[in-house]
Length: 216
Length: 120
Image 1 (cartoon, helix red, strand yellow):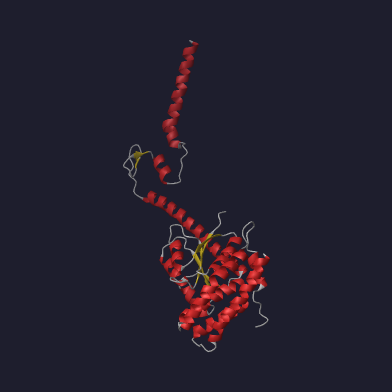
Image 2 (cartoon, each protein chain N blue to C red):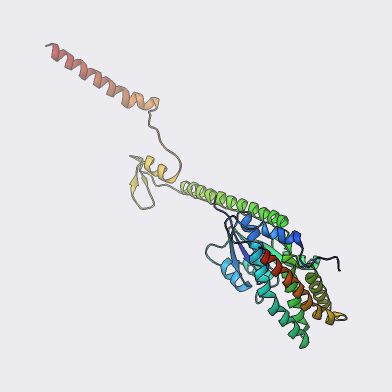
């Protein structure tokens, strides 16, 4: 499995390095940002990391500011954000979570606690990705159903169907393309009497005539 | 306070175990970063204190506390934590000796780190 990518944003090199080393040891792919602006640029990119650990106090953009910006973005699988803080008053924690952080870890980080919280985040991220995939496939299925709910122009004689591109297609072709239906060909009792039996009889007659001819 | 270690061995040992196989020692890397990063921040804090910029003193004390905590520099951490608290609340009584103590405590941590790095 591809390791999940985690962004560690902290202006202090000591703290950044320690947290990064803990994550790498636990098998995550780590990228770094040395301030809030850089963290935001990384998170605002085309393929943002799945998880981010943001230091609360950074020069320029602080952790909660970065979170607020992330939450304004529409993303199908939003980044799971953990704030790193040495503030431990509940008012501060409430403020961080209200800004949109998913969790917080107090500094200096305890390795076991940090990794446990990050793996909770990883579970949430994987669940979200699985749900997004499910929604995508359901939407696709729904689009097919919608296509079949429209009014279909059909030839009254040969039963061909006029498709979206104005071409007349066989019923089989149309439905195979617009749904998961596939066809197996057979005949109904009425058509057996009307078409199949006369053909079989004609064949039988032709064979008998040929036999007679051969015998002279 | 005299019981508190300059450098907590439990923390430095834990940092050592973070080293991936075949890569440079994480502990040495972190301790070197600490030696590079902390002195200019102490200077900044002292200058801010001299200029009466308490907000800046608070920010610097807070970030020093973080770095000290990360390597287990418990006594330095204690000084920073008190300074962090005092400059946050604005009750500056007893803050001046703490500013002076920073340099002393950093000196102790530095010699401990040098000893540890030399031992490998």
